[in-house]
Length: 71
Image (cartoon, rainbow, N blue to C red):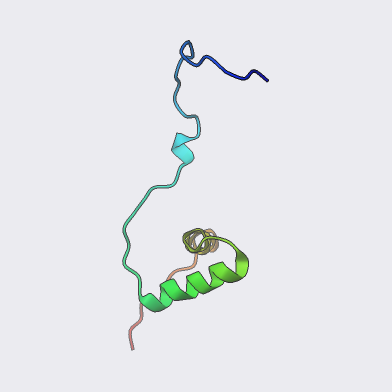
């Protein structure tokens, strides 16, 4: 490998993976929910936000819907 590289002649191009990036959103969750996923995060070594995303993706894939019948 070279000790130095000359990037001044390089042409820039769009990131081909940009469409697959995650979108940042603000969401309000109960402290108990956040603590649950943070505890799970410590056990698994996976960041808690990634765990929440994985769980929601699993719900979406299985067609799960929340029970909205209030008693």
